[in-house]
Image (cartoon, rainbow, N blue to C red):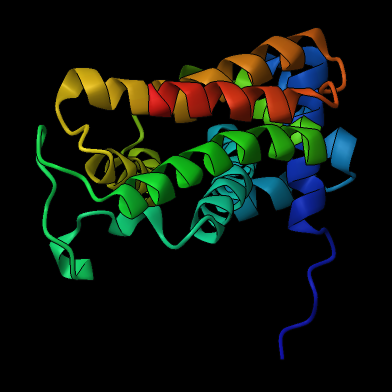
Length: 223
């Protein structure tokens, strides 16, 4: 059995997150992260390879936590939303204008509402991760230029969430671009805007925000 690492990876990523939120993404140099975490700069280079990769890992960790929370909430709301109308899951594809079974549509609405509410709940439970996702742009993670590995990892991580959006849209019969955009607005844009606004202000998420966003998402999905 390999001996435990002297410098915990999560502690290092926490340090990168702290600096990015306190001083800005451009301040997250290897030297600064080493000073904040207590890990030697050589250890950081050996483990991560570069400043870009280290900050990417902190950001992707936050993204993975966020997506896990949102997908878990959707899966708990009457099954897996990614299965909506998926032939591989035993259902026929739903095209725009096709009749939609009432129960299937209700389940899709509940899944979408659960996803919107879970995004706010995540921001309340992990405010630093939520602030990192809101404050750090993808360009901040790529000081060295294009990174095919990062792009591929991001696409792979986003795939289940995109499948969930597509499943909800199919179940609601909203596969045409204008009506699918309403699904994205309800499940992604609405909670995302609320999180960014409060995260930028550095304030605690209001206790009423999750319920308010979920109710607004429901109105959009049932309009």
